[in-house]
Amino acid sequence: MKDGNYAVFIYNTSTTTKWITVLRNYDILSRRGDFMAIKEILELSVDTEIEDKFIIKAKDIQQELSNQDKRKLLSLISKFKEQDIKETIKYIKILAIWEPDNAILVARKKGVFRYKANNFEMNSVLYALNELLRNSDLFGFSLETKKYLKSKISLSWIYDFYKDSERKLKNLINERHNNRIKRIVNNFITFESALFKDLLAYIDLTFSLNRESTHFDKNRINGYSKEEISDAISYIIFLYDCEIGIKSDKYYIVDTEYILGDSIEELILIAAKVIELNEWEVTMDYFNYQIKTSGNCEVAEKVYKK
Image (cartoon, rainbow, N blue to C red; front, side, top):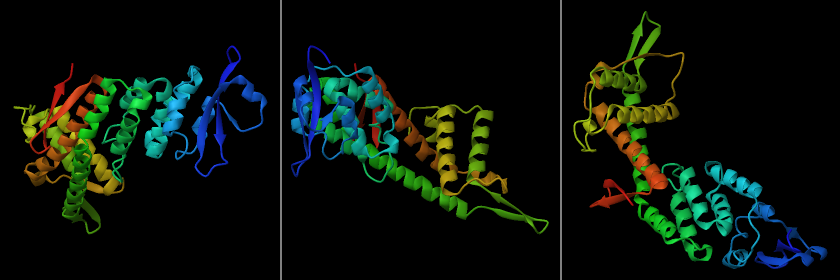
């Protein structure tokens, strides 16, 4: 409250389409009605709280966003994996009323706009980017922020790449599991090969032989460092545990023929590309790198944007 002026949100429920009006005269507090302080707007439905008229009027508010409300918004944005994308967009928009560019920057660094960070039921990242870009002039986003949103939208093919790659990996994991070796000892102890054991043996072999990447061809396994291969294997083992499960009461063995063949490297290569592209997305969100594609979107390069 300052100089008798206070920003109050009134939620009018008398109309069929709910709307929000912003009043700045403190005298309104003496009237009857439903009043909303700034933080109470967080409780509004995602279908009613952020409309063009609301953004225009809310932009006129001179009241500063309190540190407490800002911390609340940042916390809610951080929970984007646990909530509907519309909820996350709501919180970003509310913060953008007072801090337009920072709202996008915060969401970038928290991973909201990373195509890999979300599930594959729908391309929620693309939906969020388009929704925010649609209101960019109303919020007053800078040219740099608009450029970022447009750039990420142009990279929507990454979502399909992640989705297709994960589907391929899961299919190969299940195929390998179905063709695993089984051996029975003493008529009752069953030993069986397991992909996760093969992968661990492969990475042990890689470090033991001190293999290093020999060129920059990311379409070949020796285009990746030992550390990058380790990250790819960790990703595959994570998917394996989700699909098959790793059981403590099983006796697992290594299929030496498999780890010395080409099939295991083809599997690792798929995962390595996913991990690398995901890292590129992180550098784009944190350090303003740009991902450029040439030809058929499967060939990408990371370029530093000054």
